[in-house]
Amino acid sequence: MAMDPISPSPLEWLSRARSDLRVGLPVILREGARRCLIAGAETVSDTRLSWFCEDGTATLALTHWRAETLKIRVYDDDLARLPLAPGIQRRDLAALIDPVGDLATPLKGPFHAVRDGASHFARAGLALAKSARILPAVILRDLDTPVAGLTEILVDDITPPAPARLKRVVDAALPIAAAVGTRLHIFRPHDGGEEHYAIEIGRPDRAKPVLTRLHSACFTGDVLGSLKCDCGPQLRTALESMATDGAGVLLYLNQEGRGIGLANKMRAYALQDQGFDTVEANHRLGFDDDERDFGLGSAILRDMGIGQVRLMTNNPRKVNRLQHEGIDVVERVPLWVGETAFNRDYLDVKAKKSGHLT
Ligand SMILES: Nc1nc2c(ncn2[C@@H]2O[C@H](COP(=O)(O)OP(=O)(O)OP(=O)(O)O)[C@@H](O)[C@H]2O)c(=O)[nH]1
Ligand SMILES: [Zn+2]
Image 1: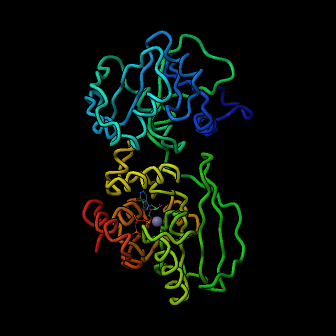
Image 2: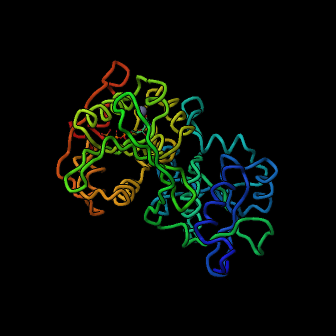
Image 3: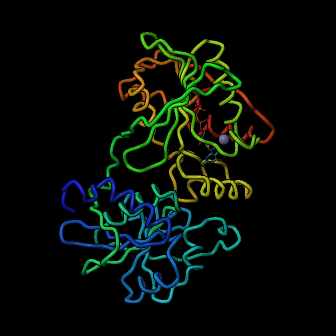
């Protein structure tokens, strides 16, 4: 991995590794002279799975959340490793990593987690799977020699995640129903991740606090008008308030499903159909309550020359993260709109479990 101008940089390798995992291609993790092959447990093919497992040394890494649901002992703080026997099939793996069938087949196990050996390859693999927006579960196997054609990355390049860096790609006038004088700015992260947008209403005076919202993408709420959440009404109300005020900036962050991606959010909805709440559903899938990085918001605001904001939110994590990164949140503007019979429990859980201010 020489740092000449033409070879991939660590960030570029990471971007490749995410795509590889998504299509089912294994990736090599390296630390010093040690190499480990990993693959997404959700995406690995039958043939590759049997290759991984043929000598009986492969393991499956799950987050502590998923392990707790399956009653697996957690020896490594935030994750658990299970041995994978030769001959294990993809449907056996699916039952371990995907909670949708948990209630139908509740008596899985007992499981004997791996205690020995280092867990950092597993931890790095799980971080990579999350950033690839697949289920947070990876299979691992030590590797003696490099494999030609596979992406190889250093464990240290995965954890801890680097602070968000984005570049402004383009902006143009976009008259919208809420405000004719609107511009849409597109920002592209250096790490090859999803693009994010800034919707600038009017011409906010940078010398004063700017009415601002950090809005996370919600395809179901923003586009389809889902009644299960409050995102659509929050989006429209925020834009209308900025129009009424004469100026404002709404950052549309492509962190669908609190950062787990739309496919995993729909898995969470399937669990909610079974009676679990929004937080429990994330945990049963193996995710934290909230996987979003609000550092994206401060990076974009800084780029736009905005240092002081009146932030439209009920979420104290957004306020804290902006403050932490030097954006002065001079006021929090509550944004409670769009309660329906279908989202009452969801809003209740956000207030009770996720600390949303009422
Ligand atoms: N995982 C998961 N994500 C959900 C669910 N319902 C909505 N979301 C996502 O939750 C996020 C809500 O985003 P925001 O409205 O910006 O954030 P918030 O944390 O509610 O904070 P404020 O609205 O600012 O008070 C969006 O990314 C939605 O896609 C759910 O049941 N599970
Ligand atoms: Zn929503």
